[in-house]
Image (cartoon, rainbow, N blue to C red; front, top):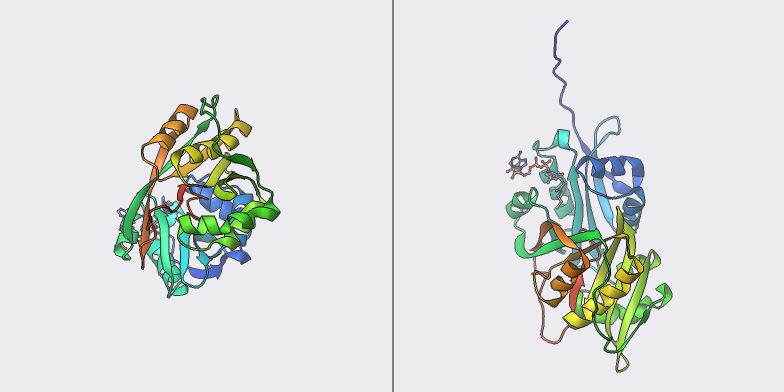
Length: 291
Ligand SMILES: CC(C)(COP(=O)(O)OP(=O)(O)OC[C@H]1O[C@@H](n2cnc3c(N)ncnc32)[C@H](O)[C@@H]1OP(=O)(O)O)[C@@H](O)C(=O)NCCC(=O)NCCS
């Protein structure tokens, strides 16, 4: 008997991600070493839209999602090709499908190193580095008193931060924040009767992601992050931030949250990160795919 067999090539077609068994999506992300749980996929499918590449007998070989905001912007994420199908054109084909379905929208994504050349070839522009900071939490360092009032923010009051968030994020993401609030614990910092910052945390992968963290300055961002870190003491926490250095990055170091990976924020169409004087800043991302 022959020692090997040549397996026939097969065609992949795009199918709506909502029609796929979540366990197949979970297997896809595990296959590339990502920490998503089935519950994380389910949440992302509630928030966004997506496609999967399937063969004739329903096996899943890849995925790509986009998360629309209004009519002219979306973030892109969950772009995965299963390792045995990689380097055969499926990743490019998935992205071409996304671009077609997002025609007319400005786009942003956070690119892994391996995916970066693909996005460059599709005319995405490099904007910033995102540092994935994570670890098991040690004691919170002393950070002094809060300038204002820092309290829990119930999910049904999350609309209080929509306007503040839009000034930092650059686009209105009210729908996404409302859905995120349903699975999150949130806090808000008030000063002189106005929102001065807010932060959310939700279960994800191995522990909790703290994000978004949106604040007027480093000290406020530290207080907001510390509010969550105190509650998670001993657990595993992750914060994705574009703060390379400065007081906020130092604070994360002192809490034991080291950088384990970096990704590159890229955009296609209008630039995504356009900071303006006096506007608040996004110190922590809602997630890699959500930005
Ligand atoms: C990134 C990823 C989706 C690419 O999928 P893929 O099916 O291998 O992509 P393609 O075969 O269409 O290749 C696209 C480009 O990637 C690069 N590339 C792919 N395989 C490569 C290899 N073995 N060596 C060098 N470059 C390679 C090439 O630039 C290629 O461009 P080309 O079409 O001009 O040759 C896949 O590697 C993956 O799932 N990685 C793990 C998860 C991940 O990092 N996702 C990206 C999230 S932002």
